[in-house]
Length: 84
Length: 153
Image (tube, rainbow over the protein chains, first blue to last red):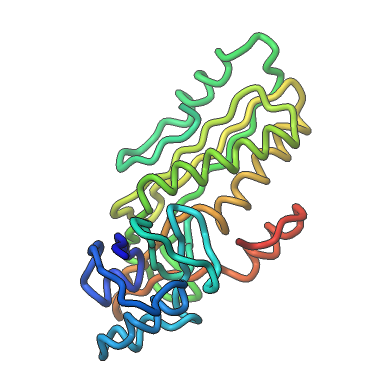
């Protein structure tokens, strides 16, 4: 399963990344599992991508951590929003 | 277009003139303009940087406007949100609503800005002398939005 990952706000700055395409291994099928898998990259990733520090959208809709991920989804990870 | 996300500044009078022209039935226009302050929690702010999620931010704002139009009789709505680096006193956001009567225009405008704060994917970073910091959603903003009978997404 291949997805596009986008980063905004604090995670984008701290991870020095705004977009990447990743191939998900078997067993990574929800947002919570995706986050745990990305934390395995270590250092900044482990510190930055916790469920309390980031929020998420799938295909441009805010989503809960239990939401399932499908092939070709656009998944965005970001800090709590602060517009206006 | 009801929504514009742009780097450039905006002219409130020009937006009001545009809304005025939408119908001869416009009896009231309410505008809200958000500005950059030079203080945040007693800390000096040199400037702010605003970013958004292209595609989703337009979609989210249009959804907010559609909901406002369902709740109140709004003849026209305009939302402008600036992005990029902005300094103290700069305009960040404009919400303008036009209606036949002021009550609908006032309520619609307040609803849209309250809901924008918690549901539209924009991020602000404050640059201060001691370093920069990403602003987080304020509890008071969530409470204001919940008054409208909505839950945070």
